Image (cartoon, rainbow, N blue to C red; front, side, top):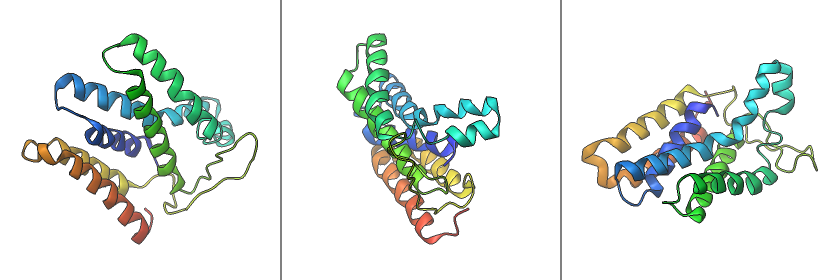
Length: 178
């Protein structure tokens, strides 16, 4: 998946996890969940060194069980020291869930995810998206994120977010993958 889909699913994850709908809570949940969902793609910086460097690195180190075990711990610690209002455990769990959702979303694309790299070069993919990204998936996520902010649907924001994830899954399981 691409950064748009990951970011929108981070917003939807924030909508599902948010306890109360206040401006500060919204910033916290959306910020942490979006960060968790885009964190594994930090390796895209390798594209500055060319497409070959990107192809050699992308989804190898930052999409592993080792990264999932370490990144949320460190980032949650940094965020907790910056803003002590929210618990370290909650921040850690949101980042952890965000990273796991990101990796789950990447499993549906055509790039193989090497969970145990560098111990194993075996990669897994379901190959439901045949190109680097899917505009249809992006539009479903964008539409769901927009609906989750609609005032008349505010009390159903968790349902809207959940149905959006299910709609993406249904499209991918039945669609042509573009």
